[in-house]
Length: 336
Ligand SMILES: Nc1ncnc2c1ncn2[C@@H]1O[C@H](COP(=O)(O)OP(=O)(O)OP(=O)(O)O)[C@@H](O)[C@H]1O
Image (cartoon, rainbow, N blue to C red; front, top):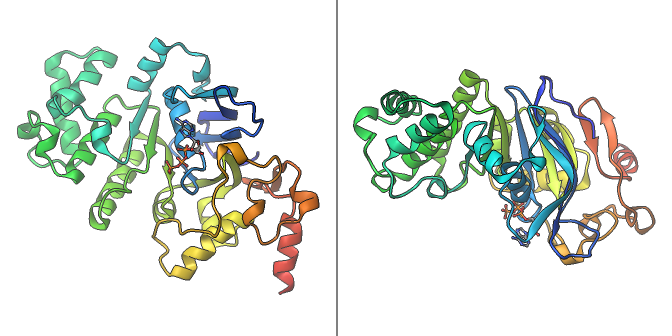
């Protein structure tokens, strides 16, 4: 699909398909997903629960659950294909070149280890710094992410900090080695609104300061609108639409799924809320149709054309949509 970033790509995911091991169903959990993230830009991957966002991000980290395997495609970080790396090398890449933050900071932080040591350790291991130098950097990083009295806090354990502070420590640890890519999976979902804004502001300033490339995985359209340059919409394991965030969210989106999502947000009057429910549900792995995966929930579905696998239709530079009926639907909309 088109939709190139405006800078050289740091991450290039090309034709990635993920399948349940032992499954003979040709409709994969994640099917032929392609996207890229340019230097210093943020791409948001959005979609309802179960659409494959987390599996896609876990495959970038080389941490897929044992029941799921990558059956085709490539995941290139600065040109090197991560799907062809061994476990040992992947471990180093995760530590040094990819920083990851998740919804629950305690999934990343070690509860038994002092926070200063957790941040300093990666600089010692991956950058070869001495303990003293690495601890000095840990103070700078804690200070940078807004932890008050950073030097005194070096020896605190995670449980001694509030949820918002734990989130900041996790971010400090994720960027400690100045990674090429920051993978942020629902980074603000568990936080209350006031804390959320502070974390987003911090991520934005770190991104500018460190020139970070960010893959943001979320179902919160408010976060997408605030933070990302481009957006890729996932539905049932496929990317169904992509484009520049401002264009896609502010103007008419093209895919019936994206339109239903945005329309229902507008109906609730809460632009910054979680994705609302669209009638019906995402098909499960065992019942995935071979044609358009959204057809059972789509008001425009036509059995003759939507029953076939959907090719991606280019809608202009950086814009594309996986719906064979996109032109008909657009004409219908214009005629009303
Ligand atoms: N370990 C697993 N074994 C079997 N199926 C799985 C496994 N992990 C995920 N799946 C299935 O893969 C599909 C995609 O799941 P994934 O967790 O990537 O979705 P998601 O969009 O991240 O949802 P959420 O926002 O709820 O995390 C779902 O149908 C899910 O049931």
